[in-house]
Length: 148
Image (cartoon, rainbow, N blue to C red; front, side, top):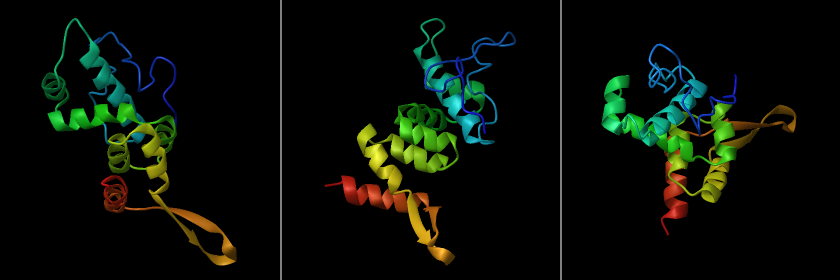
């Protein structure tokens, strides 16, 4: 899997193309194919919101991309992931559901919660294997840990 490169970093920018210079690199395409495509769309959505001319609302971006406003807003939240969580997301070590939950936390809490995404299992020969837990279990861990 390729990680977003310079000029295409999902935290910073929209890669402009000639066909439709505003929306071409914004992630207005099928975003469910891989996390990297989805991650690029996240930054594109955020960059569109920051544009002064022309200005776009979440609703306008959603309509242009044939997505719901809540979908666009959730993807924008992914730009708030800490570097360690971003790396795990881009490497497909965690799914979009895990990333969306982690994005709601402060960066230091995200990294702590990232470890709660996995369970170590030991098999033959005492080799450990890291298993990704369901999103529901991460949600329960977060609620138990951070609702105090």
